[in-house]
Each structure stands twice: as structure tokens, then as C-alpha cells.
Image 1 (cartoon, helix red, strand yellow):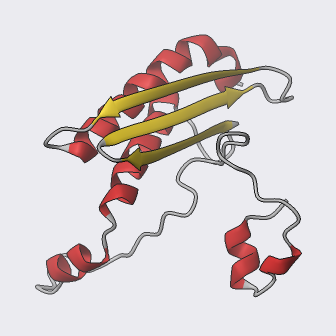
Image 2 (image 1 turned 135 degrees about the vertical axis):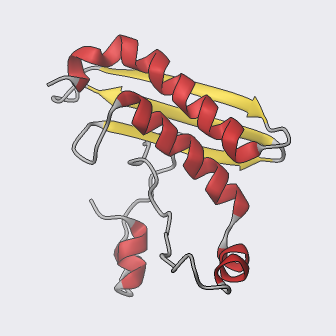
Length: 142
């Protein structure tokens, strides 16, 4: 299984035999997010950052990262999730799987975004992660 983005990068997207909808198959957290490092003392940084930032992606990413942090997960932990924005609503689905994949626990949230959407998304992701952690601790502490 390969990410479609990787196939596109190699100009091999026509070889994709299936694309999984997040409603059916949740991706690893923060998939597709890009980060750019800049020197904070450079006076151009705020302008460049503002021009490159995609606000809906940043909001979704805040939710996903907080979810993972609340679970204590890493790239080796069987945690998946996907956050997206529809109108003024943040929607998130997340799951934690047993290492053998035979069991899993899911969570989902819908949040109407207010004046500080990234902070609100982060808080919601953290709360979702903490609630799920209580039900999946046996898989996360291996």
C-alpha cells in the first residue's frame, strides 16, 4: 500500500488501483501536512508564513496532533485519525488499534468553531484522545 501523494510524486498515479476514503480507512495522523522551517529573526518570516499557511489544514492538524499527544502516541503506535473542516464545523474521526489489528476503539467529534479555531481544535483533539486513552491503555502501554 502506498500513499497516492507518493505515486503522484513519482508520476505513477495511474497505477493506483484504489483510493481509500477516510470514511472507510483512516490514515495515520497528520498525513499530507507540510512544514517549513524559517529563521525567526528574519523579518520576512511573518509575511512568508501568512502567505503559505492554509488555515483549514492548520486547524485540522492542531486537532490531530493534540489527539496523538493525548494518547502518548508515536509513529510506531497504531493510531489513526482524520480531521476536516466543513463550513464552520470541525469534524474528526480517530481510532486506536490493538497491535494485531483484531480489536479497535473509535471516537468522533463535531465542533462548531468559534473565535480561536486552532486552539479550539487542539482542545477537542486532546479531549477525544484522553477519552479514548482510558479505553485503549492496554494497547498503548506495550
